[in-house]
Amino acid sequence: MFGLSTFKHGVHPREYKELSNQLPIRRLPFAPTLVLPLSQHAGKPSVPLVQPGQEVVRGQPIAAADGFMSVPLHAPATGRIKRIELMPTARGPKTDSFILEVYQGSNQQHSYDNPQDLAKLQGKDIVQLVQDAGMVGLGGAAFPTHVKMTPPPEHQVDTLVANGCECEPYLTCDHRIMLEQPEQLIQGTRLIMRALGVERAIIGIEDNKLDAVKAISELLPAHDPITVQAVETKYPQGAEKMLIKSVLGRSVPPGSFPSAVGVSVFNVGTLAQIGELLPHGRGVIERVVTVSGPGVEHPGNYLVPVGTPVRFLLEHAGVTSGAHEVILGGPMMGMSVSALDVPVTKAMSGMVVLEQNDPDLHKQQAHPCIRCGWCVEACPMQLNPSMLGMLAASSDYDEMANDYHLNDCFECGSCSYVCPSNIPLVQYFRIAKSVLRERAEVA
Figure (cartoon, rainbow, N blue to C red):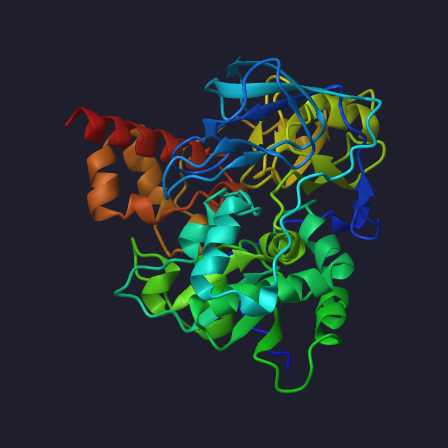
């Protein structure tokens, strides 16, 4: 049942999972005020359904999807909409957001249910319910889930792959979800299989989480179309193209999506939420967030209402006197934030706090490339980061894209991690992509 497999290249950073992987999920109290951006997903922002001054109840739809590439937004708490205004986000630009004043005297009971008979749901019904739930990829990409459930007609999907790798250091929220919510995960997987019309699903889990492999496997009868496959613990095993290669041996062509090779990939946290929410017809109003790192006094996994200010979450987890930098996401692909008043969104899987004396905050000065080839050996997409870096330094962005496949890079950070010259390769690549996008828009 279990076959250890992997992809070529990659790196093995220290995991730091032990800080939180044995701690059960704990519910965070409600902050006095929640900030709810209308854009928490790829695609068009949602459209407000309520006005400033209006009272809302927990679970109530407060913004509607604006077309197919959009999802609705639901109230994470009972309270009053104080105003709608531009607010800062973790990614930088301000965006229209609800400011929700939470009623502290409320019992915060979920008051908006629309129960469903799962046995009667057809594929199109499941797709619609997933969109109505405001579901997006909870692994970090925030791509609307119902869109992934509707592959192009020219692509025939035959396999669902559930991504339980969680290869980023420190992050353990998916691990705890697999341990504590395996029934919901399996139910969500079966619903998406029905919607896609596929007859098999593979749950890929790194072999540093064998307790999760066991917890899920024990609930699956013999010859079940859902199987569990352990894969080698290696970064970035959780990238969907890498996981597809590991569990199926299929290679997604450059510039293509997994559906091109007959696969749809969903994060285990997303599937567990679907299994939890769809029977009740509810929307996404909270998610599990890992709070960890040397700068955290009480690391763990917290069930956090969407819209909770990062500052409020850190106050409850506690930070050390040496806490210096907050990274949203994991340390390999996450981003540091300059302000703590940005909100937790549907896509935020973790928060890592580093201390001032942490060696990762004191990288040595960058030196010229010595052509050691370590980055080439590390790159999971088998690119040439060294050459891409030299072209970026001379602003040869078109050559990077046309001759060295810049757009195949998904910015995993493996090249920067191994570079002995401390060259910030990923930052160079992000700048190059940004310049090329701006040129394309002008053209």
